[in-house]
Every structure is written in structure tokens, then in C-alpha cells.
Length: 185
Image 1 (cartoon, helix red, strand yellow):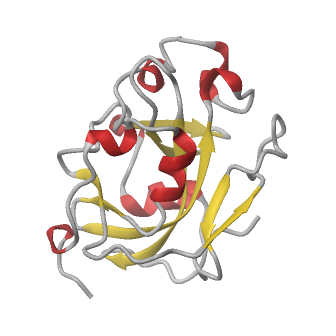
Image 2 (cartoon, helix red, strand yellow):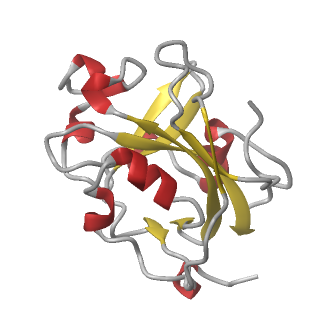
Image 3 (cartoon, one colour):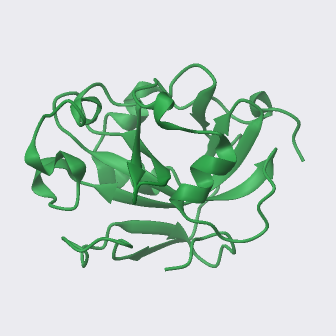
């Protein structure tokens, strides 16, 4: 087991996130979410397409709550769901065009106690990510995403998103096939 986040590959640069959100969601699989000394391998994501996507927070346009989604890519969008769980999204697309990737599940690597699948609310709890991280730049600082040292092909599965009612049939959930840490539907 690696002893620190610096043992992993480089921090993903802003240009990684300044691309179509579906590409970013797929390419995050196999990367490492790092917060302080906690590290998890990203094994499941969902893409939210901004104003074209009625399931996305940004579909109604720019508001104080969604301002970060329309801002520069490579920032965290953290919100409360069901009044009890915080969820982490990573802003994608060029500035001015909203899009984000929900990080749904991690495979524990360092500093996490998980031994079975968990959803996005448990992920943020385990990683110590809260709404105070909303708007943080994930290309620097203590909350970052790192590429693997060696990029190997990741077997990607695609399905409809989970836990939503609008645009629920859209195939925008991506996960590593047969990974035991993918969340349960």
C-alpha cells in the first residue's frame, strides 16, 4: 500500500477537465481521488450535461448555487442531498458551459476503511469532503485527482444513471467492470 498521495501519478491539470463531460467521466475511471492522506481509486462516475440535462442542477441556468458549475473547469461542486449526504462533483467543460461528473464510488487505497461498495454520500464522508470544499480548485491543494503512474486500459461498463427521475434512462453512468467497489444500484 502506498504511503502518501504523492506516491501516485501527476495531478490532473485543468485542461483534463476542460473537455466534454462524458469524456471526463470515462477518463476519471482508474484515477485517484486524494484528500490529505486519504486516497481512493475512482471506480464509478456519472456525467451531468448542464442546461440540456433536466437531471443536472445547472439545467435551470446560472444561480448562486450553480455558479461553480458555470465557472472554470477543475473545481469541486459539493452539495447536500436528502438533507443528510454530501456529494462530490468535478466541474467539466470549458468555462461558461456547465457540466460536471459525480464521483459515485471509490476503491479504498490508503487511509480509508471501506471493505464493500458505497455510494457517493458515504464516499464524501469517508474522504472528509464537505460543503466547505464547494468551489475548491482540484488541480492544486489538499483535494486533488491524480492520474495513475502508468495508464492501463480500464474495462468500462455503461448504464443509465442511478437515483434520479428526470433523464434517468440516459446512459451516463460509467464504471469499471467487475470492480467489487462499484456502488449497488
